[in-house]
Length: 80
Image (cartoon, rainbow, N blue to C red; front, side, top):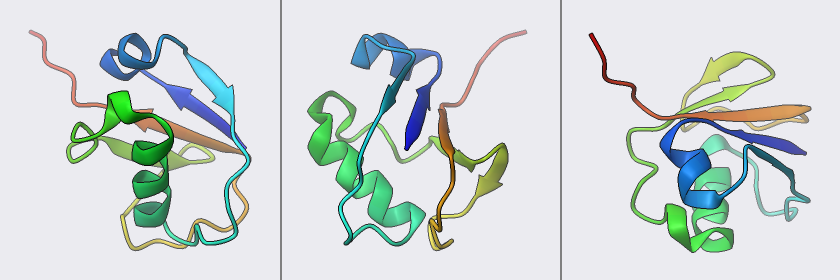
């Protein structure tokens, strides 16, 4: 599965994208976020305000992960 990191998440991980093989126990967006925080400790505690998009559509924590080709992680953006 391709995971895309944007803005501060790209800075924290040192990458804009990566391929991950998810364990069979990851069924929902919430499961994915929990797994990712274990796999990437630099993201631990920083995912609460991050929006998750599955194949370019925003998803809620309880949504089933299914078989998306791409998961995008989009942190809040400030500006003016």
